[in-house]
Image 1: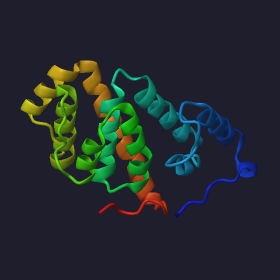
Image 2: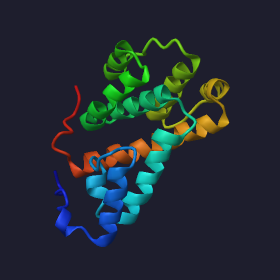
Image 3: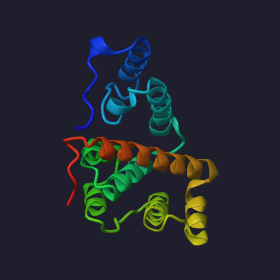
Image 4: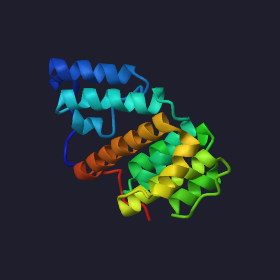
Length: 177
């Protein structure tokens, strides 16, 4: 890893405030990209608050959240994010077969229209860096406007998460096959 974990005694007052808020928040831990982001306590604080909203307070169902996160983890070959979120996806109601399909780059067999259209939207966005009118309209029909915006925010947030993890070279973030 290119950055060491900051020692408790070495934290500035502001870093300690942010660290404590994160540790006591819904994550109950300070890890992953926050190891890097704490060097900029304002970034860590604001990113943490955004992540808290997107994962724990948004209008998106947990299944949609976890499907999108797994897709981004797979796209970036991020073992760290994958290993963190695969169990959360299972807990949220994503089947093991669907998780395995995402991991292996195979279209999952989703029953729900909202899950299927989420998968199509995120796939197209990751692969083409665009979203066609047909894909947008399909997802919009099954998710709604607020959910679409929050899904895109979640995708962007997790791109930032995986980019940080990859750049910092987390030892446990070995590329996935």
